[in-house]
Amino acid sequence: MSAPAKNAEPQQMGKGIKFLFGGSAGMAATVFVQPLDLVKNRMQLSGVGGAKKQYKTSFHALSSILKNEGLSGIYTGLSAGLLRQATYTTTRLGIYTSLFDMMSRDGKPPNFISKALIGVTAGGIGAFVGTPAEVALIRMTADGRLPLEERRGYKNVFNALARIVREEGVLTLWRGCIPTVGRAMVVNAAQLASYSQAKQMLITTGYFQDGLFLHFVASMISGLITTAASMPVDIAKTRIQNMKTVNGKPEYSGAVDVLSKTIRQEGFFSLWKGFTPYYARLGPHTVLTFIFLEQMNKAYRRYVLHDESASGGL
Image (cartoon, rainbow, N blue to C red; front, top):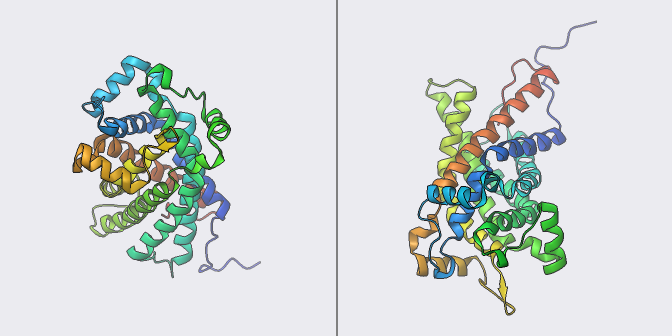
């Protein structure tokens, strides 16, 4: 029997595996960064409507949560965070890696503009799928800042989703969908494209080789770019999804209304309120997600597809 041709094309990962690995990587990263997501959401909601700010700094917010809600309080909303990753990240990374492979030619990755367009597409679709879990996450992490009589008291993400549908209607699950999709398009265009581009640029310096350190540095660069670009949209999304309707009138009419009121009442730079916990959350989450994803991809290609030259491939 003749040996297989040396130039035979290596087997490709199935689309289902790409979706599975994307979601698993995001969920694993969330376990580590959920407390930072909680602090970020609390900071963004502090001072809403011109009210007195509850937290002076991110560290003040964290210490207040620990003092008032206990150690378990910093993991409030973890079930919603995991479901968000299972829906949003599974979809966005699965679509991104599939389109990335589709647009690669002769082993060369797509150019930066193509990566950004792929990221926008993957992020928008993923955000629509993940919005219900996002609404539950925002409400669960925000609950502890309210007086006892005003708290929603969701027991877990499934209880939150069921009560939202029962008490406010099924369409409430997609409240803030437009700014959520907008944020995701910005995040993914910046995050996924800048991560791939940073990896390529770092390798060309000659000081980096494909491995954990390269993934870490590229992820931190990507996280910083993504944080600066996406925070104003994230604040609009957070406040819309947490708002209540009083006497039949919602607090905000849309994302533009949120941004204009925030600038008018709290100042222009309040659009980057919570920058530290946002980056402290997004940076490590980006690092951990990509590291987990790269390692899972590499292991699958090596041990299942028997491709000894395998790299992570993102």
